[in-house]
Image (cartoon, rainbow, N blue to C red; front, top):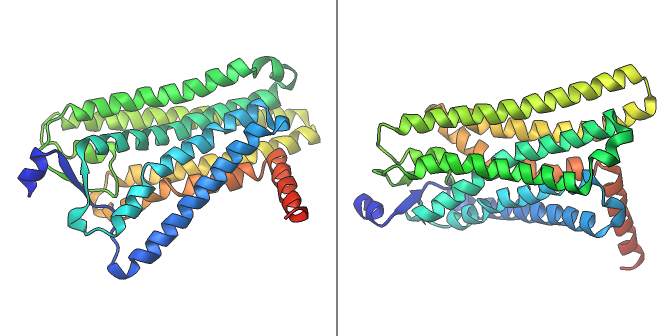
Length: 313
């Protein structure tokens, strides 16, 4: 079977390890989570795009987050749910499909960092340079920031996956619930795999350092302005807007760091698999609640919609 699998470029994916008795409960749970993530994130995008009073740079930049969350969840959950009812020995995927899945898995992970970075920059300008905010954060600037976030993500991931797909393969099993770069280059027996490991580590350090450093510097400057100004109105605004952003960033950073860290320790493979799935579920599920509903304008709009439905059922 291994020779046939390799010859036809068909890979075996571990998927979720569930007992036959727990298959339906796990499937229903994942389905409910997936539906909630789709509905909440799509709902936020629709509300922001259709309501004129929400047509501000902050909200337009925020739209990048639910778009990325929808992509990150959709790229793994439907297939995970599909494979739950298959025998472990029958969870096949073509190599091309695996590469595509791995590509979007990593674009999602990198875009999480870059999108939250440009949102932090927006908060910095709004609080530290309020008089110049409208002049700096123009529609053109919003497009440039969004394009740079997605462009850098695509560029970095293209190099990462490009180094992997050039390798020959002597194995056919993806030792992960879904395809990612680390699982793909582990299919190779070439000595150059160490190059992929080195680049993968450097790539991770660059993304994490750039992300954490920029957010730390940005909010450090915001905190300095708030302390020196002693303006209660400014401080209240900073706490409300920046507090939710920091909460979203911490949730994303911890989720992402957990499974990347555990990838280096084979003895914790089961925990790593769970952490990798949670990274695609927890931030996309919590972001609409933590950021969307904690933003005053969005929360008020949802309350207006809810009140209309109560009055006109």
